[in-house]
Length: 315
Image 1 (cartoon, rainbow, N blue to C red):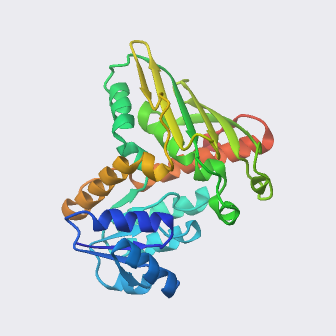
Image 2: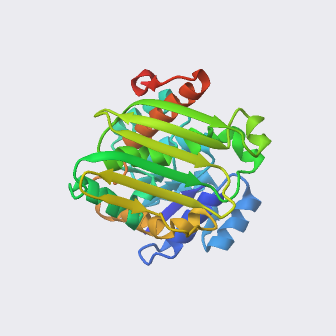
């Protein structure tokens, strides 16, 4: 099996390394725009270096889009036209309009696409979701999610990130939909710069809080920070009428999200390779990215206007 990875940044290197360790994969091609950077990254990952054009023309069995956010849409559409399965990092694009256009193109092309919402593959989070979906928690009362980066993003990353709601919390918005089985109806979001002025220079925040009201009235509370002095932290608590499912409620933290979700990335890679090998339904279809981005855009609007915003207003 030959897999092409587009992008030589942190996620591209992570994906290429994980694929190279999988016995199903015979050949990993790491592609980028800077030849020197690509060669260095490929050597570190045990992959072959190529340009994006060379990688796409070489007849890969599957493609991973892990390039810079601004190139996701272009690379995803180019990959989908080959008709092979694609694993694409979130987001597809930074606007709902562009994301919808790409989702429509992918639907027409018929290429199977898996979005990189790796938290769905975390064993503990999946167990909490299964307990909720299976009725073992009873009637769901509320969901709470906390996420904190170990270290704040470098300034060069902030302008192209899309902001805290699109970059960080889009994973939480996906989890809210996945765990509850409901859609978000309204959002109220706030945020502030509490420690790192570089976020303010780009109209972003380093600390955030969001209240989602799902379409059945269930409240979801999400809070986040770009810095935690104890390390990376991510917690989930699902409260029901019969039981509570809690993830990450102890004192353990991690050096990075890569360490925290190491098992999830392995399981996610396995799901993608099954898609390449066997076909079938994607575990995280493109529509999941679209719905999560709609919530993120509503959060941006809510923070800017200081009021609740209907998610339907972003459609």
